[in-house]
Amino acid sequence: MAEEKKKSKIDLKARLGKTSIGGAPGAAVPLPVPGPQPGSGPPPDGSPVPGGVPSPSARPPMPSVGGIAPPPGISPGIPLPPFAPQPRPVIQTPPPKPTAAAQTIKVEVGEEVEQERRKASKKTALYASLAALVGIAVGFAIGGAKERGDRGKAAVEGAAALEKDVRAANDKMQELNKKLEDAAAELAQKKFPAQLTTELGAINVPFDATNLEGKQIGSLPGRVMRQVLAYTTSVQDLNKTKDSLKNLLAAAQGPVEKSWKEADEPVVNFSVVFRRDGDKTLAELVPNKAPFPFGKDWPAKYAVTRLERTQQGLKPAEKEATRWTKGDIAGGDLQALPVDPQSVAAFTSEQIVFKLRGAMIDVRQLLEGNKENPATETPGLIKEGDDLANELRKISLAR
Image 1 (cartoon, rainbow, N blue to C red):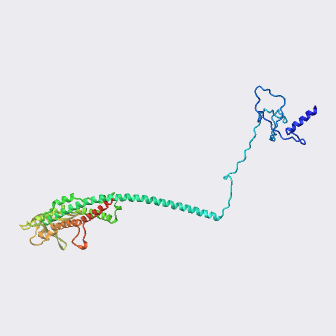
Image 2: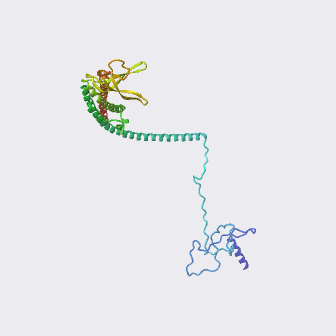
């Protein structure tokens, strides 16, 4: 009986893999976890629980984890009951396969390959720069074409506006030329054109640099642009000459009308007085304060106007003079000799009329041109204005 118990004990240890060789302890056997065994269901309700020691499990022993002792109170040689929970098998995740990014490949590159890479990089940068330049050039070309188109349209509109301004200025010049022609005819008949002074003040040729603003004259053809600039300058000169003529007319009216009136009945307007300057005798031409008729008796004494030297310079001063008849002309009291009116006419009224006629001729030559000398012939401002208006008309029709 004792031998059977000993034999059963030895067989149980052999089953559990606890056989010791040479006294060395065997590997630890994992403890079974209480719970249902695989392939078996729970016992039915009400069924008696079998008593006694359960039969050993037929499963092969699980590999033990070295160094882990069984829970306290449980002998390492006694298996757990079959209904105890079984430990879940530990599934070892295989290590991840190395990816392409994780793999390091070392490739030896020669100097020639590096040079080719640098050349390729330079070419790429060059091509990128050229492409950028081409893009900029194309952008500028497109923008420039649009801008030129806008300027061209503005130039066409400006040409139409300039044409109207030039024709309006030419109409005014035609009016001015007609008035000057009538005034010259009156002067030839010894009639002073007094109304011309007022008319010249009211007439102004309406064309100057302000007419060119916003007209895009820089986009006009070169020849037409030069015509516009020359016409503008000539009109400004014409207005200045016209104003000078107006001022001359206002100053000349009185003396000219007086001289024409005295042509039939000459009047002594000037006298000559004498004075001594050391051993020299000097004569002065002085105006008579009250001119007297040349063909009637002359007064023995009359007043003249002389220029005297003062600290402020020469100033006119009225002096009484005795008409010289005989004796020492420079001695004693101031003596005067009447002057023949015809001898001084060229220096007074006739000279004024001559200047007046010359100023009128200058203005008319600006308007009509100089036709007298073929070598210096000029077309005239009116003709230039007509030609310019026709050119501007052609440009304005090219819409």
